[in-house]
Image (cartoon, rainbow, N blue to C red):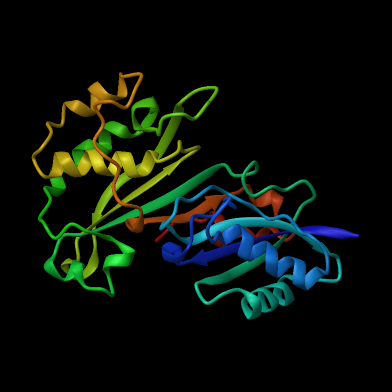
Length: 267
């Protein structure tokens, strides 16, 4: 007998080709499933709330998997953290209702993108974890651009080519820029029902061009009306992007009260 669990995973994406297994390179999924197989003595697939590109980080990626019923959430958390590599860490483990799936059961996903606008962003202790732009940005222009992105739109112009999708519509419930503490720059916070491949990085790259005065604000509406990405700015570099959380209905948790930290608004 087995039951389904949800792990909230943090990882430094610097040394990974992303979450998903790839023909070559080190993936987070391969590392996580290797530990599960060692713990359970058999292959145990793991499913994440979303894919991440090479170099992208996570502070709260939901990962679902099945484990023998003898395991408890605290025991799984201790065992996973004892065996996972140093650039991965499990913050929480929850028991979930039958049929739960980290990707298919998610109501929404949230990402954060950090940009360093100060000279110190070039530090080797910061550069792997943010876009070391080291130039001032017009925060008012960034916020005006983000406001235009809120709501439901066709984001085809902000998606990588080659992906076959039934549609390119996404609903952005949160799209806002905020100053980082200590004058370290700005962060973009975005939450949506779904994201397209490279979408957040292409949104950030375009808004940064607006914040630098390279593009007018009016081009956001123009891009949202296009059916290709030929006029979209290049995507922002991956190291500034973080998968922050996935939102799940409380009823999917075996102990609903345990799910509040997963679904509660960020502070």
